[in-house]
Length: 281
Image (cartoon, rainbow, N blue to C red; front, top):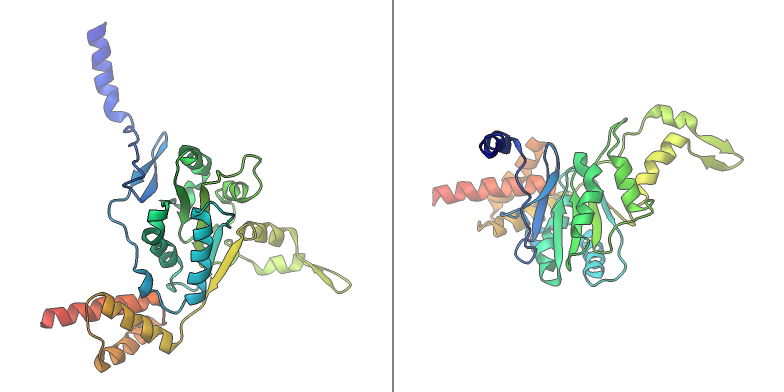
């Protein structure tokens, strides 16, 4: 019977999910939530993609507000959940990631969670509630389509669940949508007018109620030409290149070809320009 049992275990064992790794938060600054067939686990991120703080240009007011809020958080003071919305490529996710190494010595840690895995948010929070560190649960490019149920656990976690979040957990999200969900013309027909007052319909109220639960709500806007060039110059210097008059001209041409001026476009140009100059040398 022992021999047969060992044979059965040998056959079953390859199909079992791996044991979740034990996270040493003293050496691991960030983890990613991975979803398995039976359960999820936190996977340490070995190579962090955190842009330098000084390379983020044109968003000084947003930098001050988010950094102040997170400094309150790591100090054990009251702080708000963060929602960053606005134009694509203007530094929303870069701002959050740049603060991790900046505040890591003060106890800040980060957990990246995909939108579809937000249903596991209670399990994620339960696993880190007793840790002595302060955790930012970071979700990038957050938006929901009609019929998706993942936004309900997020709403409950932000403000609505009887249990609430652990005091050492803060949620930060970025989105290109102001209210995180699509808005349709037909919803305007639900609006009611009583005297001089405007009362939005239930569909609109439901959508606004999600974004409204983030206490710190900041918007990002497209850059003008001077801001774009300043960002490109900053990234060229960060990557070890030299900013010249031809670089300025090519940066403008690069933005025209890409159809817009943003921090992402500026960084992509800087990588191309610096790389080409390096090949010539």
